Length: 594
Image (cartoon, rainbow, N blue to C red; front, top):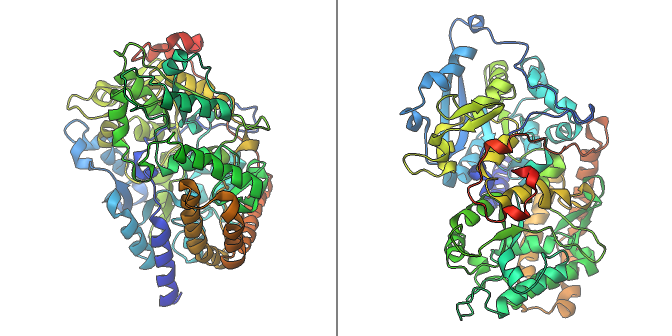
């Protein structure tokens, strides 16, 4: 590969990598046992690999280098309570290896990934965040460039991971290229609830104050927000309410409720067809009008383009926020923070139904049955087989427990069948948040595992509102056919380069144009034809659509089986072991969730 080509690919990586989201580090390791879609939804028992590594296979330990993004804590920071022999030392002895970690602060990841790929100086194992969802790091491109191995070459060393992806055809599509090479390890999820980590919520007590029902339609939702804006629901005599709190990204998700996304969408779900949003004229105009209404009628906070999300907690405490689009953790936290408030109750609502009666979603995790962070083995590894044995361990029950719950007796204890986090994690004596305590004391850098509902249940579902949201409100109404995100399709190298070149200009133009439509600088009816003409005739949107359709079609056909939605509903029998931190809303919650 020429120097010019390397530099071009590196610059594209760095350009696209700028959109890297907070999902980089912030997601806790949340995991669940694998489900076999061909066995009536029954989960096979997760068991250690049949091929236990023999420490005597090698006289000297094999050094394995591992690169991973990291937060503020290092492995040394946990040694006050977690002995090395309980995590890293355990692995080194078990696999006769010496682990050498390079951890990179999140703010350096963008630069470091580009340098490592452009100079082909990858470590043996690399954890790459946000990879195939956002095309920040393309595993197919890395494979084509000879930078990562085909995992089929070490298939005998990774039996547990291979079993998982072979039993789940959607996962197999994701990790495979068109030639059938297996390129990376992913974060499988098997239960629908785990994909429902966030959604819409509204002040139920404010609705009750004005005799309004929980919104079911878009008109209901907008009417409730207008009522909050105009009628002083917090009763302080000031017009300080924020009907809907969010940022520009939140506003775009509101637009997605119409069933069409900002650039490209799937019509008919992941087994359907790709469309270019602006070319779906009436649907896209409806999307633009909805976004513009929120902005121009001040239903969303005025500073949404530069909104500091730290303000949300402040505004919650000040009794100012009427509705939000956010995660289960905040729904839990806010009701807990305001448990002494006489009426405060933030409650989940469904995605509003459109005129056709459908509720549209943009759940990428649900489409692919995996999270968007991956681990790869580079061709620089002298012993890819040993790397594979190590990584595979975390797809066994034993390795999963270490990576997800930590060390028994220190970070968790067993309460029946529930691995229950100790006070070190949920009520840290040094005042660490749960997320910080997890990051400090649990997990092995660079290692992924499957997702686990038992994490969600005890860390994010401790209020009636959060349990109702996750188990019923947000999950019961989901259908895969109305899920609009593009699947994690991968293009061949030439197509990928062409697509990236087109999108660099097209996506920028769409973002700038949507901002003008949103603020009213451009009239939607007057300027739309000019906007669409520029997208189609000047910025090659039709060619980008052609390339994307080609890649999605290949993804749909990959592995020799059609797309099949594999996520099941969670079976939970441990609610009685997880106390509610607040009783607010308990009368509205399904009593089976107690």
